[in-house]
Amino acid sequence: MTLKEQFKLFTLAVASGFLLVFCYNVYQVIRHILKLKKTGTIIGDLLFWLILTPLVFIFLFPGNQGEIRFYIFFGLILGALLYLKLFSQLTYSFVYRLCLIIKKLFEAIIKISHLIWVVLIFPWRVVYFVLSFPGQLIKRGFYFAVRFKRCPKGG
Image (tube, rainbow, N blue to C red; front, side, top):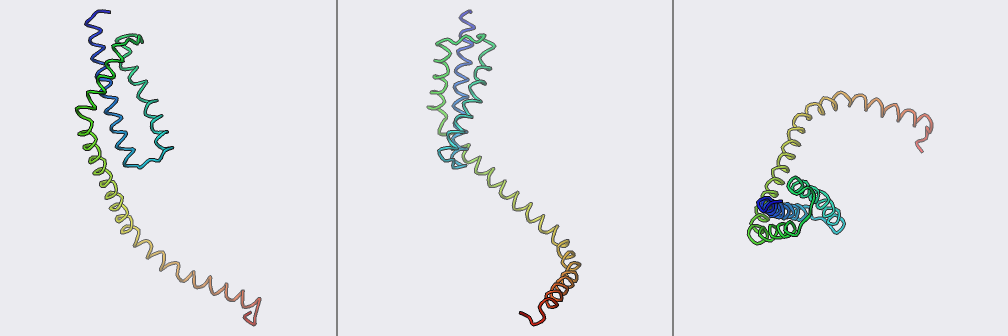
């Protein structure tokens, strides 16, 4: 493997570390918004690493055919540290605000959908009530008559 190829892999490792911490930052925001408890956090962390570890391997595999070298670990750590130092707080606040906006939009869509549903279904409910009311009266009359016939003294 030439020095140029190793430098290319090192750059990919730095980018992978950068991307890993970015994804973890987004996951932290989601975890904070969902207010996950201890069990939810453990499951979320496990899923996060089970998904991202193979992705990093797939990302780096074409260049090094599965050979793990020290400079790859160094590149991953360097990329993670660079991201943490330069972009972590900015990204966290941006993604947090973006998630809150999406959450509010989703809630508004749900409320509007519910309102539309109520407006559309209201006439049918009125028709149903008008048509079923006489039937309900007849049903109650039969119930009263059968009950009265069984126990004529009312008791």
